Image 1 (cartoon, rainbow, N blue to C red):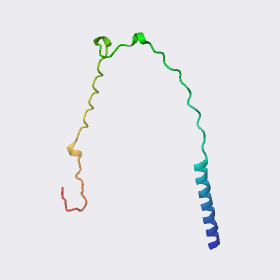
Image 2 (tube, rainbow, N blue to C red):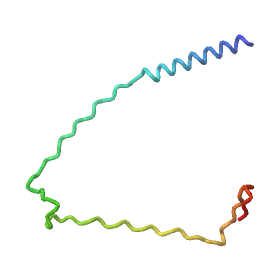
Image 3 (tube, rainbow, N blue to C red):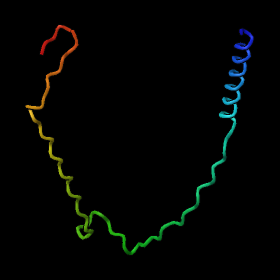
Image 4 (spheres, rainbow, N blue to C red):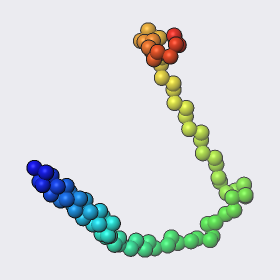
Length: 87
């Protein structure tokens, strides 16, 4: 029985080493990123943002979410751990 456990232990150690070596040495080379064409630049459409005619308007503020309703009749007092504190 002891010999079988030693063999099992040895097999598990070798399997663990094999998986660790495979995980550290196996590298799949990623494909190079595809080159995207550069966007066209239209200098005639460019306007400095400091000019009043630039037409820049600030974004509206996000609407606040309503708070959830609290129902005191559904609230249950919590039992605190025995730290000498009572609710």
